[in-house]
Image (cartoon, rainbow, N blue to C red; front, side, top):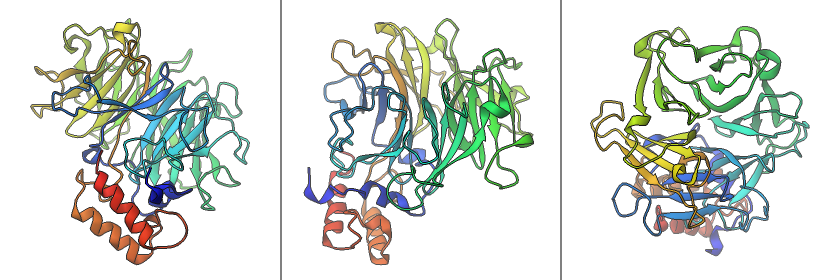
Length: 429
């Protein structure tokens, strides 16, 4: 590993600036991260030869597991959610260690296994005393402000959304005042079993498989800006008894305008819907607002579909679906909108991207989290690594912007520039 890219806090330096929210979809050209609960690892999968799959030798590579050199020997056996920040960092919710991690491929070698590339963001050691038995959703709304949804099977409060922020620049959000309760979901909603978390503007959305209550997609928004959700600041966006056949499953993602939700029961005729509140009344209440964009009958020939626990949205109008079940049903499907009709129903738009990895010890075996990722050197997030990224880095360097201190030694010098040039040379390797 390059000696100039082994900082103790460098993965946080890039994330400290003014770029917020998720990385734009068009910038996510560095592949697909696959969190697999049987492999106990996160893999990066890519189509390197242009045949529209990642089934060939060398197209599935280890991105993060317990062998990492950052001194975190036990995590990543139960990755429940991942979030690609516009800063370049990837936030990871992990259920075995009840922890949210923050990872950054600082030397652009295609993984986060090197020293300093992954750190704890929040853990059970947080000063507020909150437990995180199941961190099931993560979203960054502004620079360094990260919302985490916890399914609280044994914690108090139970299902809850927390607002986290590193206020003292020590690289985590475990300190006093850095992890605060934003929404006591179990206290307000009642019988709750929540999954995922996305924001469109200031409004949060998640799926809730609500025990004896009707499964629904819920929303919450801090309308009075007091830092917490209560009363009429949350509601039902759509429930499973809607008149349009739209499902309410575990997987939920957004392209910034619409929500995408899929069935998660293999016993059902699984489908993927796009939900868009066209009239702005806060609910899905007409057929043109709930559009089926894919269904199980369109799966590639020979593919047996298991349960869809996760999905991800990528560049060029693409969606990845994670299928889990028997060996033959363990897969990642790639949906591509080739004819620009905002659906995936035409010929050759549904592909087997990653097949069962049971024989190789690689994904897919039990896919639980997916996320398309951007290149670390793509600083302007336009999907290209070019002169304009170098120009942006040099502007940060000249201004003393914390993002330019890649060595994280509180100096701006030759070693930081060399570190970025190494990253630039690697591009999306």
